[in-house]
Length: 129
Image (cartoon, rainbow, N blue to C red; front, side, top):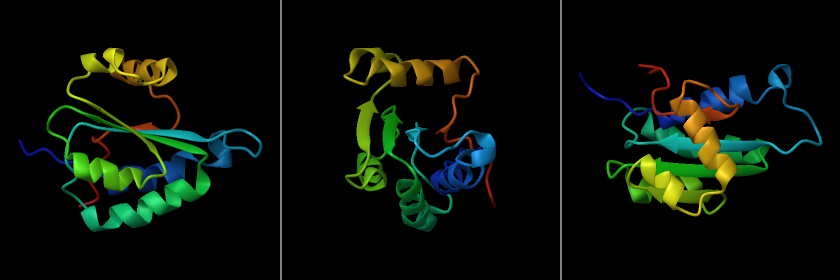
């Protein structure tokens, strides 16, 4: 089975569906988004710069976390655009051994338990093919 990583769709879904007043977004409250991927974007790649610009315009802080050796470090740096905090880990277990703030590690670990903190999306965002 083929594996797809559609970062552009994940970014678009976050800005258009998750970061909305109807979902809890409000003035005066910091908006933090954590982008987590364990693959290389291979769908809608040319849309990533546009979608990331929209994300950076409406958030206060963005964390980009690339996990496993399958990620493309240059792609992660491009996604972070010098505006996000970038972390790289070779394994999910390694997250505990890096300098990632504990609240981010806890959020990622919650996702692994099937819980979805607001603003967290993974590479398995449905394809828009």
